[in-house]
Length: 502
Ligand code: BES
Ligand code: MN
Ligand code: ZN
Image (cartoon, rainbow, N blue to C red; front, top):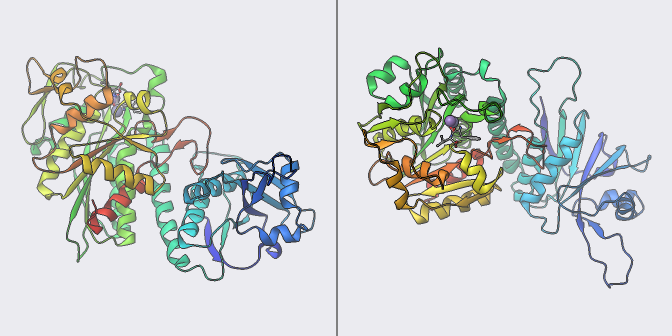
């Protein structure tokens, strides 16, 4: 268990294992003037004084430049109480995002230490929030399945602020809430699919709902079949672990508006009978990342007491090949009555999402947002870190992208070209689940989903296939494996809906 607290004491006398400071690149005053090429950011003055003003020069001698992502460790040799100063590069634009990432990278580099103080710039509530969130997120590790030795996360984090940093206590509490919710999502994504089937995830969602006071309803396979949820039933029927649909609800007594979130919850995606090759399957435990983000966001919204009504649907299924699995060319009836010809059982996400999107109309949403690890084409188009945002309304799309930007999540607006609908024509049903058109797979999936969005509802679709899972090395506040992508964006969207700006 990690604790995080605030203090406004001078860092030099703190009894901690390391002090984290920020550094930024610095141009010498004149082209031929000598200088360390970097300077320390706010919060580090006392550390510099204790080192006789030689901090920047010492770091420069170790090769530090102040660029974003850089971590440089400096032994203090008794000049400070703490044995080590960790300088985190903030880059030239040392805004809240840079602070969050730098705090994350610094704390991750200190795994195994007991106590760490962060003397990064924290003169405003926004900076406190960024440093605290980054520290908590960078401290993440998934140790549940490890035996033997491992570097434990830092036990005690202290964010050093100015004496008069207004709103710091609230900012810290918000960071705690966001971090614990994102941690939940990361844990769920990282959990091996043997231990997280649809029923397991539904039970965890119900448990979380109970802890924070969310309403919860779970439909089992029988209720799904009787209720006409043909997409979820069809995708789930190949697995011995039956599907579920979870509905989470949060209401605020003064709320005037309702936002509905839908998150793809395929607990493992083998592709079904349209089986994936091995190297495409090995990370498909992340295929419930959308459902995780919706659960995490609703948890945070409940704890933050956002003035909005928020509902979350988690369509949960395991996509397996077997004697009971759906076949390519089977026809499903989605909730509400539209039929889909399943030409490829690996395009399963859109089938379970269709049921939940259609069902969401019964909640009369002012805004509907779905989030899904939907297509490999998202990775082709935007890479591993930037999610695609599609919408049936230009303003909604722009404001969702803006909301993501404000919480430091990378996203990019994408179109839903109407001409792509033709490729989804089916010879036998209302629509096919894959297109005869080869290109624009992320957009095709969005065009498919649009067919199931209730009439007149403003809707945005987030394709987080890449961002949900980091196959590479950790960076900034992002670990290897499950990332918790889109969780903060959904919370921000709910706050914007509450404020009437989205
Ligand atoms: N879950 C995958 C998409 C995915 C790919 C997520 C890579 C994360 C990383 C989805 O169910 C899928 O298999 N999509 C197919 C659709 C195709 C058959 C039209 C894809 O993108 O290949
Ligand atoms: Mn698939
Ligand atoms: Zn999938």
